[in-house]
Image 1 (cartoon, rainbow, N blue to C red):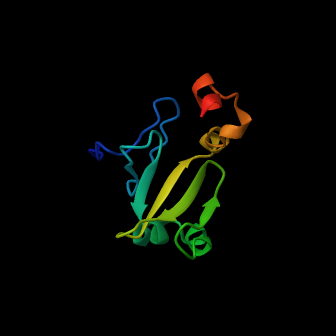
Image 2 (tube, helix red, strand yellow):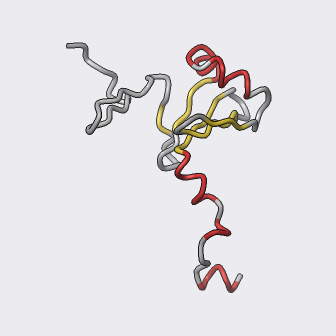
Image 3 (tube, helix red, strand yellow):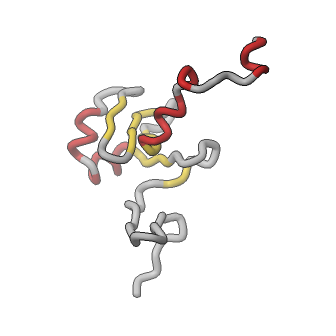
Amino acid sequence: MEKSDPMTYVCERCGHIDNPIWKPLYWRLYWSFAPFADFEREYPTLAKQLTHRLAKTEDQYFVYQRRGKTRDVVHRYPKALSSMMNRKIYEKTPSEMRG
């Protein structure tokens, strides 16, 4: 049996092995990143839609955004998080109402 990269995600329930180009984005929960060159090689159809920095696209499970000030990278996060990122759909906390 091959030894896998310890950073590669493997689902405990279904056994799905995530592509090893994705590395965790430690300061954002559930986000990961990959260099654009690797993304372009592994996902050519999605890469064609990310024509410039800050461009966004999505597939069935993830939202992809081309980012990076000094390095050309792609960030991805689960689509389920995109609804939570819109704070207007949630009730505001008392501290948010004050300021």
